[in-house]
Image (cartoon, rainbow, N blue to C red):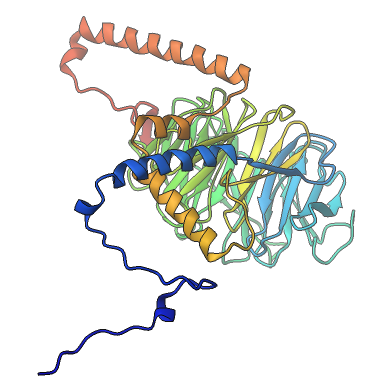
Length: 445
């Protein structure tokens, strides 16, 4: 009778660099009655260490601008180059590796320029002087003349480039579609009928590339389709929106930064309610951008803070601030989603870690495994009160903390008044309006 037995060499499963043989471990829970208690302690230590090593601020880039920074855009074809524009009309291109500016143009426009990158790494800028300039930062020197200029009939407020075509959209009281290859051709004009209000922001969809979204002074969000040259839908909110950003991974979803301190996520197929409402800012949300993965957002606010959000959660996962940072007008992720860039009213451009406690660089296998194990433990025991409290706690600036308390009291008073009205009127027989439907005033198709 032959009996076959497994036979392995000790060196085959020995830890690298060690001479001690690794003993097999029995994972039967009956043999480890204190495993959950040990894991909970490790999770507590892991979340404490995460907060202890949290250092989100990395550096201020160069000498910044001499005026407030109102627009920052990352070059989609480069991990290290991005451009910024300031209130004095200047444009600068920065290099993240050296943290210094590599190109600049002074007084490109008379007022605040709005900028975007083209497919071939050129820079488009527009301003209230009714001009659109095309620059080539990679091929020209500082303060060089623009390659091309387009003249409009009204002040331009925003600009966005098509992802795959050589065309771009510029907004004034209408949306004008220009062709980069045909400089003399008249632009295609898109407009909601009977609407003459100024359009404040415009953005091309990165997936469904023929869809264009815009926000206007009349608190509306309008969707356009370039294939039919017609508007698709118009939604009016309670307050005006300052910026609109498309999810780069989901063609139908976009986010708007609103004047009522909130960020609203919408599905363009169902605009009668929001997908999610992100609450936390205590002043107007001025800027919002999705991460390249589409899973997170970053926002900048008039309350001088930057907040990071998970797409499916209502409250921010982290909040960044510094003592000298003023009102934040522009934020963006780097194309690798590891860092965040912010431009504020104090003229500085700041570089932050997207994950405050994470350090980049080469790590050993042991370090990587320990990091992944700690992250899994924190996720597993994140519902426990002590772990949740440590993970969510942030030291807020005194002004922001006080404003948050006042805002909380005001919202409670409004809710209490609405409940009293509901209790003593016919509204008690009506269906309650969801928090995700309250901000939508009207819909038009």
